[in-house]
Structures are given as structure tokens and as C-alpha cells.
Length: 241
Image 1 (cartoon, helix red, strand yellow):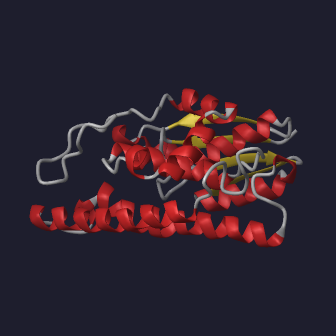
Image 2 (cartoon, one colour):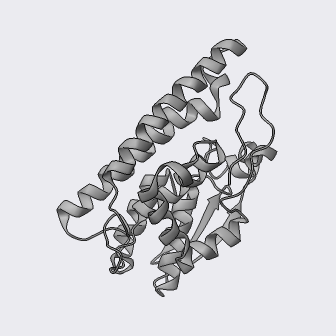
Image 3 (cartoon, one colour):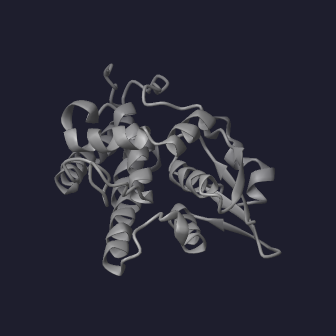
């Protein structure tokens, strides 16, 4: 049986790969273990992890298949690899057009939403030196994300998963990645629970899934996790329900 090890950080984008592996394991197709990295503690910069991924990023997947061992980084690459290795897990629809739609979603979320907009909110100091300029960078990222959330909401079904309905189990890795962003949006003060009812309905169905509950428990995260205090020049996140 194939064996995997996922290097992840709690609540990071690696959460989607973690959920995919849990789905695969519950289907009896492979087993996996995890290595937890705490980014605030700098675990990603320590020599033992840099020996695994010199870029210092999560996720990383180590695998043993048919007597061969390897390492793979980058979330989308890992998700594609797992999908191709275990088509029985139905991590994306098999029909070519629907599979392409899945990658359309995943690519947009990984690039525009995560790497472009959210990084401005997470790390404005990477883009500007002065405190005033950093505040402007974050404001730019927040404006983009507000626009993206409206786009996302308009493209979601009224109920069910992206590729399913309220009656059909159409769960996919798109839904797994969307719960990552729902949690981030909630933590960073966008209040998706009040503003985006379709996203709320999808997130509730995702969170009710046993694999997702198991992964949230393993990572020791939930939707009510609060951020630590932020610097005074950045956006101060209001209390949310």
C-alpha cells in the first residue's frame, strides 16, 4: 500500500492536501503520517526542514510508491499527484470538462486569492518599508479580497459542494481549499458568516464531513481561532461571531 508523509503547518494552505490524504486513507487506498511545523516558531527555517524543502515552504509530501521514494512540494502539484495516483478517491470529477473546471478554481484560488491578494494582507512588510506604505499595501489586498469574495459567492451553487448538490456527494479538493480560505477570511475580519450565504452553506457541509473533522482535530484548529495582536498601523480585526 502506498505511504505518504505530509509536512504541514496548522491552518495553512497545506490543510487542503491534509484533507485529500485523509479522504484517500479513509477509502483504504493508502496510509499517511504527518509532520507538524509551527511557522511562528520558525520551524520552516530550521535545518532539518530545509533539508526536506530548501524553499522553507509547506506543504511537502514525501511518498513511497512501488518501492520508490520521493519528495514533492507546492500544494497544487501535491493535489494533482494524489488525484492521479488515487482516482478512486474522486478528488475531482473524472469528466474532462469538469476536471478542467476544478483546476480553474484551484488555480484562481492559489494565485489571485492566495499568492496575490492574501499575501498583501499577511505580510505587507514584504512589499513596503514605511508603516504608512505597509498599511496601504494591506488595504489594497483587502480591497482585492472583498472583490474576490463577491466573485466567489456568485459562482457557488445555492447548496451543496462545487460539483454536487444538496443531495449528491460531490465533494472535491476545490471544497477542501475553499474551507482554508473561509477560515482565513473569518480570522482576518471579512465576516463571511454574515456576508456570503452560499459560501457559508458550502463550508457547513464541508465541516460536517468526517475527513475534515478529523483533520481539523489533528491540526488543532477551528473556525473561531483568533489571530494574535496585530501591529497598530495595520487593520485591527473586529470581534466576530
